[in-house]
Image (cartoon, rainbow, N blue to C red; front, side, top):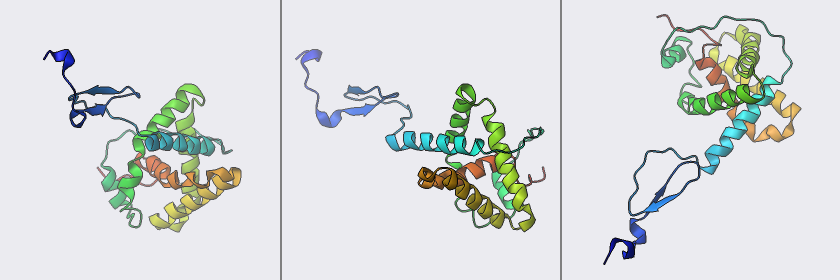
Length: 182
């Protein structure tokens, strides 16, 4: 039989692709990352939360960007974060999504989205820094930000689960808490 008339066994068919393009053949091996519906939905939820945070009315001040390289796990240890340490990897798993949403906002709607997000989270941090215990500071920041978001839009109820991820994103960008010594 010729190659065109060969019957494809369904058990040998694999499917993959990118940007909703489907490829069907006996064997296709690619390394394209696909975004399942839930990941796509998460991306829009995180962007929605970021938009709500940056819309909060706050006074802005210029600040210098700290560009020194450091190990984020050393920063967690240096600041004696204990309660949130175990969940840190989970929260940081949203880092790339947060960065892409901020990039989209800056390119389309809000040119200073990242600066505004940092300012809101820094202001919350400074409000609770007197507590001295880093886990209490993070907990209070999370509670207040969640309450503000819920008060401004009750539909945010399911979305506030991403608030800790956004706080830890700002933490990882060296906008809150102390950096470890080099």
